Length: 448
Image 1 (cartoon, rainbow, N blue to C red):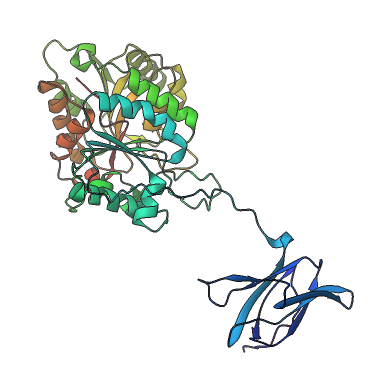
Image 2: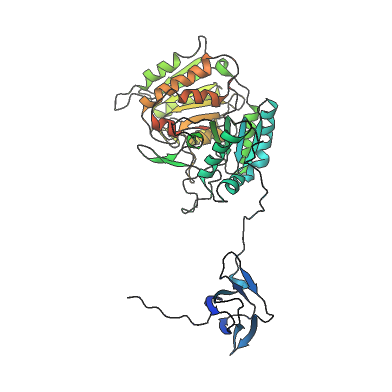
């Protein structure tokens, strides 16, 4: 049963939304103060405040603060009355300065999409890349929202912007760097923090829903991005400054600094991570210094000590093949988030290649993935990490992993990380591997 009955012209908690015929006087009471404002909201696109000059007469009636109003216009009017106590302060509103992102005179080889909080932090990186000959443009993610989604916080807006730039700009971007963390909880329903600074796009894979930065630049839907995409998943200016300083100070080492290759023991499914790592090692140039660590039957603590010492020696690349989760290598924790503060290879940062599950899972608002922890480590760790946000099968990773090493070590001439990883992606047909592998780092970082 539904009962419908009229509300009295009496305020509820110092506010009342009501209707009144135009030209007819209505008396409203029940306010705690005579300082009452009345707004005509009949037309949401033409809201007007009534003033105490004939349209509304305010007085105290029967000891209760109230007013008499005679709205203008025609027909039935919808009015909203409230006191100052019901007016909430508005936070986080800034004036919009048009960025003209649709201008076809725009051109860039390298686009840095950043949250406003990190705009000053990224300026030195933009200047460095421009000095290297890359036309570089810094774009605020808020400007993208304003021009491509009417201000709505939306991953689709970012993709639409990149697609537009690829088709209409005078020079189409080849590299994209997101500066700002992403979150699986963009509206902070879980109360763990509003960290969807540059949105994380969630996609469905065989085993789970997870983030895909590759999606942003895959304009034709074939699984291969048309631009090399990287992300610095920072939440604070201090984190941004730490990471960008590491990038600016990095000196390419290539094969000269050697490689640390770590393999898990054979799994229950019979897949041999040691044999797969043998294949990677065979792709390294002759004379490359290689430290090989096989988990085998060793204890977790013993292997962890070898890995930490091996990283601190400053290899150019660290390769892990085995099982893993968000913040660890294997259930024994052969490398963990907690190990990052003890890494001291700051003068010889490593590229981490993680052929495992979930190490790149950057979108959790309550937990950093291992890849981002290594990138943010202050005294060492990673210059970049290539890892997955999802759970995939090792067979689907193998071809991509091998092609990455051919790109890194077999070629000649200058090479940026984004180019090597674009080449490696094209070598696999595993759709989940393509969707979930992310570069936690700058795609324009030079490898050689």
